[in-house]
Image 1 (cartoon, rainbow, N blue to C red):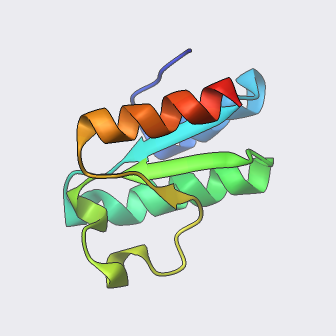
Image 2: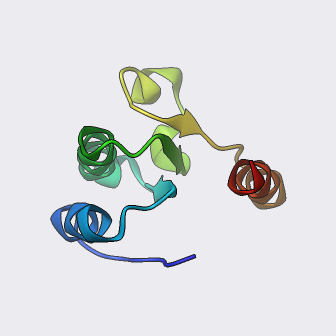
Length: 89
């Protein structure tokens, strides 16, 4: 499974060419949440169907309002289990 770290426009460009099955975007701080949401919206606009997000930047319900995708559990092992099930589906 390819991974990428970087600026949101680069991630959307990478997804445009690689056509990923699953995308996970993480915002560890509230200050990075708006860029993460912009990236999530870009992935949705590309037609990526399985979009997930995680991190403390999305801890409050208000921070998750109108965010495309599915919130992963805060526990890393639980999040991995969710993704493994999704990838196997």
